[in-house]
Each structure stands twice: as structure tokens, then as C-alpha cells.
Image 1 (cartoon, rainbow, N blue to C red):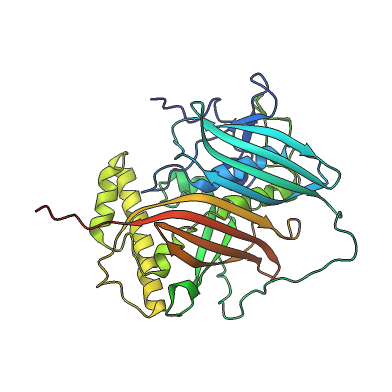
Image 2 (cartoon, rainbow, N blue to C red):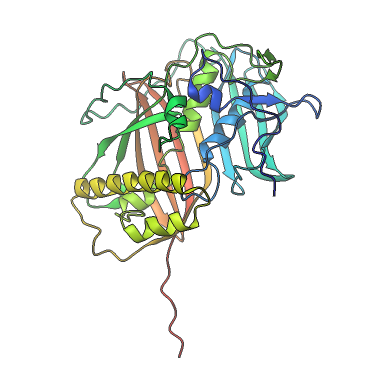
Length: 377
């Protein structure tokens, strides 16, 4: 098995770029063919997950597609399917197909491939800025009023120093729980959190198509200002998404110490990495227990356990793609209107701190419970 997570040696981190810009950077493979890109840096594999963090595939597909469109067009929707679990030890190739270039709309499809197999596919639609005309039909869901403001945290905390020191949370963004609603019915419960990219996303990134780095490697970066923020938002949109189905049912995945130890036992890594992973899972367990207290229900007597939970598809509708900064606090609110037949649906709304509705996302996932063993007669 290959142990090379990138095709080309990762370029140096650009000091004027935020951690999420460096994490999501792409390299164009001009010698292989047009509109083909690959991940410039290794991708994160969350502890206990089957593969890479899905937000990376979503965001890098968006970045690759954005590299093929004029700057006066902006993404308004993308529809994605998770096909296979991504391997963090194997490079990903992103193949962009230019489906249609119209006067008002442009369509692209992107396939993420590993070892010749498609692991992720998405279709994206871009709209020309101002194509909707001056007269518009407008309305938007409002920012919830009963949400505590985000905490005053230092946005310039050095992500790379934290990672080098063995910090548990390797995500290039940060999140803070913003409470839950206390409805009795799982379909009416809402989970909220504040999220933002760490550091500051650069105001004047280099040209997305061919940027000469100091070490001589031509690299494809996330794009101009609004494109970088859109890629960052796409990355963060997959945080705690399908897990909402389990959480509104008070199904705690890691509150049981045995579940954590089982995950650690299956984890491949050094003893130091296992210790970091254990701490990470214990923090998630504390969050789950806190949510249960907010819901006013204890899961102590609930013997149901999640046997399998993976994302199947993911859609993002961008409402105000040029009216926010992903490195400033944004509120996400998630709810699950339906679950059944081993699947669950989650809807997510994302607002800027000032109350602008930025995006609406949906995700369906495979959510299966552990089944009782059949008694043999």
C-alpha cells in the first residue's frame, strides 16, 4: 500500500495565508492533462472515522472547479455524493469536466479519484454576478434570537505551532457549542454552534491558476478573496453534520469509555498519537453529555448503539457568497426532519454573526443501529 499522501512534495506554507488556505491548497497536474489537480498537503483523518474528513473533498472539489471559471461567476449550489472512504495515505486526483458555459450560468462536475476509483463526485453551478437583475424576490430565515454570542477567543492562535506541539484538534477551524433546543421530539430539536476559520484568510491571494511559489512549484490556491472564503465554508459545513441524527436521539457514541477504548484499539499510530486521540474522543463525550442535559433527558438507560454512521450525500446552497468572511464567527443550526430505514436526513443553516443567511446545507447519511444477535435454536 502506498504511504505517500501527496504526489508532489508539499510546498512551504505561505505565511500570509491562513491555515485553512494552506490545508486546502491544490496543485495543477499540467503534465497529466488539463483541469486535473491534486492535494498539495496530507488530508486529515478524524479519529474513529472510516476515511478522510469529508469536508476536505467537498472544499477541494469546489476549489478545483473555481479555477476553471471567470472571476465574475460565483458558485450558488453544489450537489455531492460520497462514494468510497478516502484514504489519507494516498494522493487524490481531482478531475474537472467543463459541462456547460452559459451567459448566466456555468456547470462543472468534479470527480475525486484514488487509484483510478471515484471516491467522491459533485456537480456545481455558478451564476454570473448581477445576473438576477435589479428587481428581486427576497426573503431569508432569521438568525435565532435565543443564542448566546460567541466567546472572545484569539483568532491568531498559531495553528501550525499547535499541531507541531501535538495538539489534539488538528482542524484548521474552531467551533464552540451554542446550545440546543429542549423539544421532546427528535425531529424538532436543533443543535447550534459557532464556527470560524483559524487565523485570517488572505485579502489578496495569488492567481488561482498558476502561482509561482518560492520553491519553484506551480500551485493552485483556493482563489481570490471570496473563493477562498467559499472553500473554507464548504470545508467547515461537514463538521458534526450527519452526527446530528444520533445526537437528537441522545445516542452517545463516545460517552461510554468502552466505545473510546474500542476506537483506540483499532487506531493505527504511536502511543503518543493514541493518547491524543483518546483525549479528543473524551472531549466529544463531554459535549454529548452536555447536550443530553440540555435536552432534559438521560441516555444512561438507552441500550441502543450506533453500529454504522457515514455520509452518503451533501448539498450546499450558497445564498450570499460574497457577503461574509469565513474567518469571522458564523452560527450553524442543524436539525433532522427525518430518520428511518437505516438512513437519516439533516438540514443546516449558516448565518454570519451580523445575521445574514449565508448558506443552507443538507446531508443524508447511513445511520444504522447495532442489531441484536439472533438466538439459535
